[in-house]
Length: 82
Image (tube, rainbow, N blue to C red; front, side, top):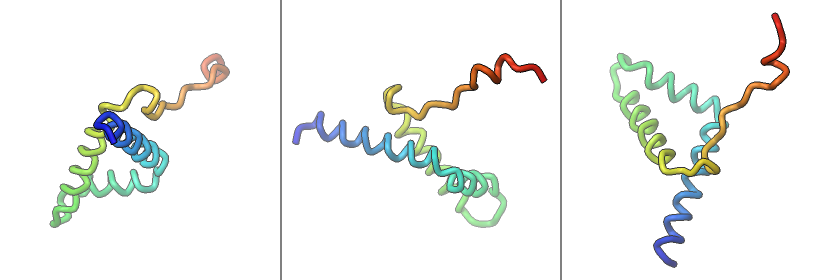
């Protein structure tokens, strides 16, 4: 297996991880709750912070086709009046 093939497999795996976590809102809420509870007496917030940092690091090199798109507003919602 060539270095390029291994690098592509790692990139695809990272894209799968980012997409899965993006869709798992329950996990993300628990993760951010863990990170916001810094004064709990233990270092679990530090592990949560390091996980988020690692997630950012693996998502940086992903190409635009592998990044999770943000939801776009619907055109009719932009033109509607309250």
